[in-house]
Length: 201
Image (tube, rainbow, N blue to C red; front, side, top):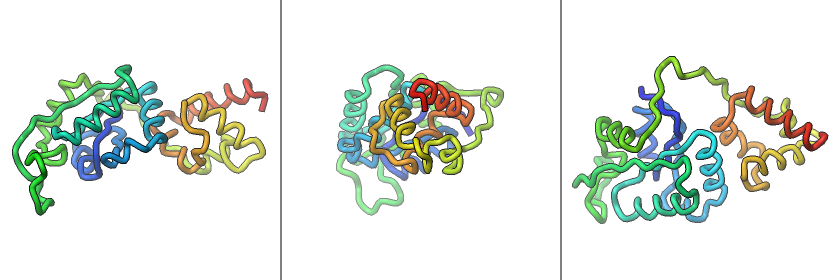
């Protein structure tokens, strides 16, 4: 298993399944063209890019290029890397029909091709010594930290969302996977204390 610092953005669940067998990092799906209307996901990607960097890995067809360019224009170039797969003629086994451009997508690539694409993108490969064990945040942690179920929870959550440049309507449950991608428990606790002191909560 390869460990990479940056989060990786792919088009769909089959791409994610293929990569997750090879790479240990956060993998996010655009759900195809759904990313064009998903302001919440774009905001999350922006926060991820600022915090740990992201790598965009889409198919080599026209649709993949459109999605890549949308992310590029929405996020800019800071902390965003691009991995490209070669235009290989073929069809994934699970598909009954050939694609419009008759090319294999990310899910159809070999592990060697994917590793090469990630290396060429400038991905930060981590050694075993650099990987720190990370305890996942839970709903209970959100309650204990005051982000849900408390008197000032909405105010505190809003202040945190502003800090992360995320839409203020995100619920505590929706916020959980985002926080797990961005913080350790210790880092989040420190961030919450800073906000509480600033907001006098």
